[in-house]
Length: 216
Image 1 (tube, helix red, strand yellow):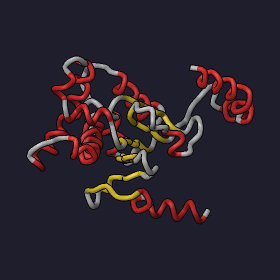
Image 2 (cartoon, rainbow, N blue to C red):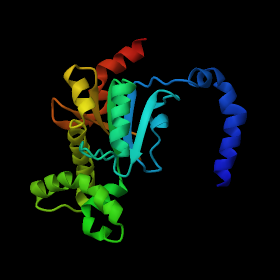
Image 3 (tube, rainbow, N blue to C red):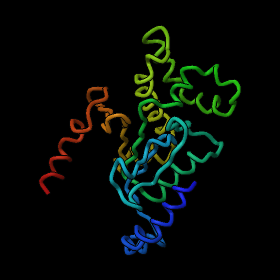
């Protein structure tokens, strides 16, 4: 805890005063443009990866960046998605998985989670992705970890589309969905391309936007 306590002290003494105007503007309202759904893994820092500031991202995190299909049972993810889309009016939703994901390892060995019943039930939301791997290869094991991570992103995007608030905004073009995979060892991001139905490099998918940013 010592480094955490030291960090809070440094924040209060240095970081906060340096951005006092920003925090003052955020004191009574927020207007994020992006809902960023990612894993709880300690190695992922959405604000660091995107170099964004407080107020830019509405962040939801859980084991495996899972989005349960919409149901009448209220859960934290369901409520957060509804609030972000219907109330805050986010324009983009990013579902970001990552390499070496412990949740995906668990999904590949679901029977090994008997002693962790809540984790086992939660990862049931990834079962469809595991079944895709099994159908494709005849089995699903550790050698398919990266491939499962990709399929899980696609599955969670499907789940996201079952949420009424999301469906409504998608129908009017007011929300766009993005599937990302962050590679911890390199800092690279692979992104799902609907045209090629595959994951391609960040620079390829957002080439036009990158060109605009560079030229401004």
